[in-house]
Amino acid sequence: MLLELFPYLSALVIEEVERQPDEVVLRTRVRARTADCPCGRSSVRVHGRYVDRLRDVAVGGTGVVIESCVRRFRCENPGCPAVTFVEQIVGLITPYSRCTPLLRGELTQIGPALAGRAGSRLASAVDPIIGRDALLRLVRVLSEPEVGKVEVLGVDDFAFRESRHCGTVLVDMATHRPVRLCDGRESGGPAAWLRDRPEPAGSGRSRTRTGAAVVGGGRRRSC
Image (cartoon, rainbow, N blue to C red):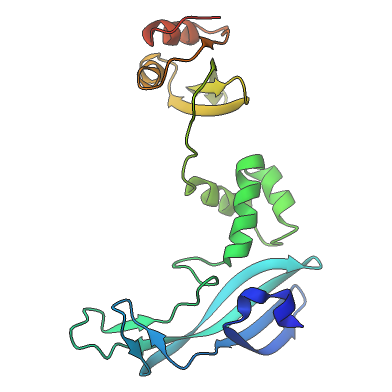
């Protein structure tokens, strides 16, 4: 039954399920007796063990934690520069991550859409302890999506922290999605970005001097 609910745990043996007041803990270990070193050599010599805790998607509004007894093996290849290595559980453990790929995928869909406070409120349905700062950290490490051809470009400026610092945003008017954020209100940065892009059909109207300067500096015509 548990493997039907958690198919990505098929490489693990679930030894215990503990219901705690605020979460469910699954204590597991790896099924395989051997592990492969990055050099390609298989090893059975266990150097040590430690417990790795990963948060998973909540079930029934209750947080799920997967505790895995992870082994560190000693490589049996004399020419391998790595004396020891940690066994990897494909599809479950990624380096330096504190959550499963399933939970990380859910959070990285919420983060770009709603960002900090609003995103953390919605994300609490899949991870009850997620905070806005953790959600924003996930957003910052995402790769920027490729910007295709922009038919109509909108230019506007905005302010950080009560107008103490300003920036410029370029928006694809067809999709209403930002395509570039530039520091400051000067036209140099946006105009340089425009010169490296294919010619758009036109530029949207802007009530700021920055927008007019960008169009002129980038040699684009206005609608």
